[in-house]
Amino acid sequence: QVQLVESGGGLVQAGGSLRLSCAASGRTFSSYNMGWFRQAPGKEREFVAVVSRGGVITYYADSVKGRFTISRDNAKNTVYLQMNSLKPEDTAVYYCAATLTSRTPALASEFDYWGQGTQVTVSS
Image (tube, rainbow, N blue to C red):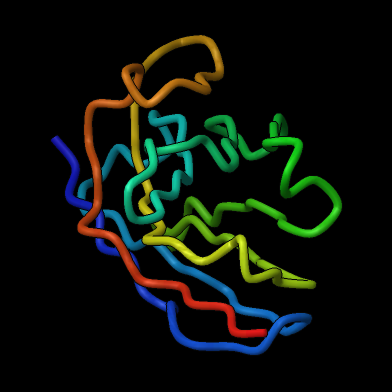
């Protein structure tokens, strides 16, 4: 079992940057694949990025490639999402998620644990 708490959201202008953090409880953080998802009002929750247990393998949604970077610090039980060149369409609630799935996941249904979400709003 793992508890996830996101932070770092806020209001920024288009072109700006934010870094989201997800702090995880427990002693087995390095056993989990970690992902970031987002959900805008009236839309489905969508995949943003995922990082493997050791932080070596990463995957990104096409919409954020080249702008967002996912990383993790297993010693600190924390996952990060660095968001650069933000666009108004990035506005959403951002969630971190964890799973013990052996292969690197990309679907929300593959994740078992979720944070409460943090709001990111990008103005034009």
